[in-house]
Amino acid sequence: QVQLVESGGGVVQPGRSLRLSCVASGFTFSSYGMHWVRQAPGKGLEWVAVIWYDGSKEYFADSVKGRFTISRDNSKNTVYLQMSGLRADDTAVYYCARGEGSSSFEHWGQGTLVTVSS
Amino acid sequence: DIQMTQSPSSLSASVGDRVTITCRASQSISSYLNWYQQKPGKAPKLLIYAASTLQSGVPSRFSGSGSGTDFTLTISSLQPEDFATYYCQQSYSTVFTFGPGTKVDI
Image (cartoon, rainbow over all chains, first blue to last red; front, side):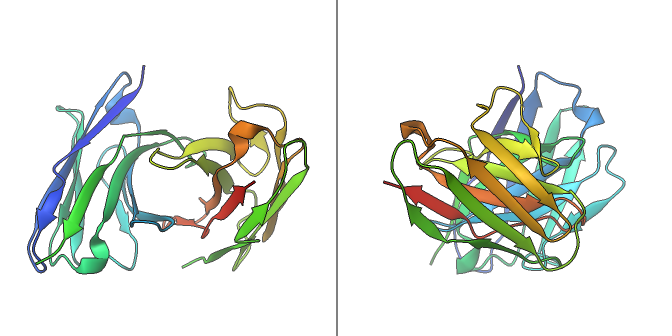
């Protein structure tokens, strides 16, 4: 069965960097685009970034553009979110999700909490 | 970027009620609209994709309609397990966006 497991969250000071990982299993990872979606405490869902199945294209929400990068290693079935210049408003649970043909998200990880605080 | 709005932001309903949630896009997104249900502490669950296609395993009391800029999610007869927050999401643009959510409670 499809499984997505995020890791790398934690407490980080403002301005610092953090890298999240999402390890996939149960499907052909190299055939799917992968997304990051976040949810601040008590708030709604915010789409963050996507990387094409082959890593050829990446797109970002305006709120993270220029600060976050997304990458993938298809040999390791892993997608990464490199976050730099972190701000308090980046505090959220970060989910990775598999992009389906309709660009909907059927499969999600359990999420990893990032807290930006001094 | 395409902005998504939802109404209402919250609603109170009873078991057995028919519930309708509206989602509006800031520009036409054809039928590139998906609906999710989220319960506290859990990842979202895909209910409907491409505006009206029911995801496998989702009860038939859920239905979606619309195209262009205006969409609706309908729950024909609300069940106890349906009390949750519902989000729409557009997949027309490569900058995907979610609506702000509609909380359905008792």
